[in-house]
Image 1 (cartoon, rainbow, N blue to C red):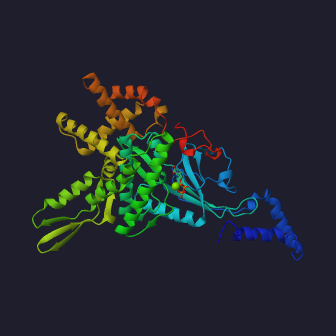
Image 2: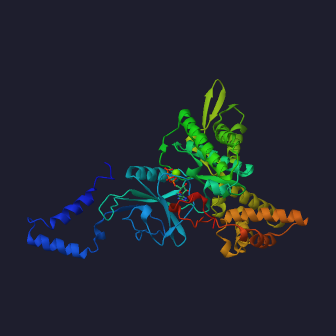
Image 3: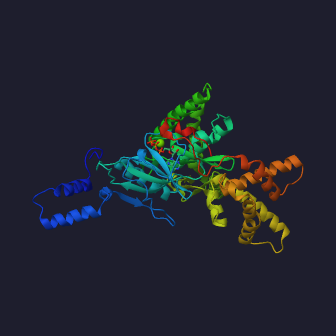
Length: 468
Ligand SMILES: Nc1ncnc2c1ncn2[C@@H]1O[C@H](COP(=O)(O)OP(=O)(O)OP(=O)(O)O)[C@@H](O)[C@H]1O
Ligand SMILES: [Mg+2]
């Protein structure tokens, strides 16, 4: 049914109820009761319908103070904040509840339900995507006109739309990082059986990940979940990705007044990077009985790429064995999981690699210096208490919005290395923190939430907002 024109059942009930006030067939008793209800219900807002489905979380807000009975475009609320966003078809607005931001996207009930379901399922499969927190449906406006549904997602903290991730420059190294992150996201989506259908840089968000970038899916509306994707489905997504990315790179080049000659070969990098990673992850290995290292080697290689295999399949034929890995059981986040298990710190994959390397270094030194050598748990506890936490705590609180803690720690290590090189001797982490906070961090824009002064509806390009 087209909700844009047809009244919803609840609206129909309300209309029937109101008209019944004038209906002479209604008994006096009924009339009193009904008019009392009407009086109590002043203003008549109480009769507009709405249904809200929320994923409950500790400390969650209910968002009931928002003007749900108006089209999202027309909202006026102190909760609204302007965030630079990618190009898209729908009205998307952002609200702030004491520093926790939510993205609200208005779309048809069918699409809202579909996107909600897909995002929830991607979350369950631990694919990097924005977190769906709810859906508001059965909305009616002041004139009882049915309004579109609203999908609620948690704003992805420290995320950047691709233009800001590129810092509005077509600098080769950053472009390479961006394309790499995007290709990796596609591989991860495909491994989990997700066909995207609208792969574009605008439909992804990027977070800093040590020296790299990590991509998250933000728009799942066109997606489909399958048990396993065929080569044809994967190929089709890659074609769409290449075409969309080409258009997006040409747009950026045009905005910068650059020729954009490299855009085509850059866009072609997406399938090339994707295929390389896909082949590395899914390649079959052959070995003879007794060659015990093959499985180990294969798993170690996967871990280097940041993946764990939930299951391996070994098939014997003619005395040789074939080692197969089913894409579906491939789990990204090898280092991330190890760091979380050891320290409780949640980081991106490359940040986790960096932090684990520092932790391993610390442990190695402790083994040499302390007798008896500390257990792994004791070393981890000491690293957290004596190294990581003090370094983060030494950064002035007002600078916490610049970087998340694992990224900050990575940048502090980089800065210490740079200062030590310049000084010709080892600089301590404390010295590096003090210098980094004042000479670098303080000048950087906040990235926890990237706000813009510009109202996107005023005709300014919304994605060109200020990084506050
Ligand atoms: N949870 C979120 N966190 C941060 N930014 C978000 C979030 N949801 C949406 N955005 C921003 O809003 C933009 C638009 O969102 P989205 O792509 O879902 O809608 P759309 O583009 O209108 O849909 P379509 O691509 O179908 O036209 C995104 O590119 C992103 O910049
Ligand atoms: Mg979009």
